[in-house]
Length: 264
Image (cartoon, rainbow, N blue to C red; front, side):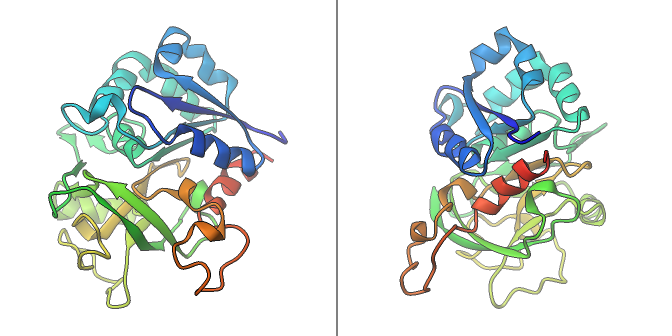
C-alpha cells in the first residue's frame, strides 16, 4: 500500500486536526478529518482507514476532565470497532488531548481488574504549560518511534502529569518496554525508575512519575504522547532554529514518516 488512509478524529473543542492531517499528508499518507458524530453514525468508516489519530485540543471543552467525554464515547459506543481496528495490524496515535482520550478507551492496555493502572492528572504547577522539552526515546517495538533515540518537541497542556498506581505497576510497564518517551535534561539519571520524577521542572513540565511523556500499548502499534510532533515538522518551527543551524525537516516529522512507512 503506497498511501495509507488516515482518519483524523475531531470533536467539539479539537483544534489540532488540520495540522495533524497536514503532517500525515507531508509524510505521504492520505488523511481525512471526521467529526465524532460521523464515526458514531458510521463505525464502518474505521475499516476504510489504516491509521486512526486523535489530535490535540480541548475536546468538549475538557469538561469533567481532559479527554474524558470523548474517551467515554469511544469506549462505550465503539469498543468493538476500535478493538477490531487494532487487531487488523493498524495504527493508533493520540497526541496531547488525544493521549488523554486514549487513556480512557482501553486501547493503551492500561486497565486491569482493579481499574486504571495510570492516569493523566493536573500539572504540578497548577497551570497550563507551553514550552519545548527534551525527550529520551526507548522505542522498543513502537512503530512511530523507530530510529529515534532522543527528540525535542513542544508541549502545551494543563493535565499532562502521568501518574502510576504503584511501583510494581511502573516496573511492569517498564519491563514490557512500554515507557517509550521520558522527559530528560543534562542532569537526569536515566537508570532511575521511581514514582517520583527524576527531572526537575521545567524540563519535566508537569511532574510526571518517572518523567513519562508517552506510552505505547503491548503491540507497539498504539502510541499516546503529551508532546506535539505535528508542531515541529520543519526546522524553522523551532524557536532557536537559526542559532542552532537547523534546516530541513523538524524532528516531529519522523513519527509521521514511520507511520506511513509501516504500510509500504
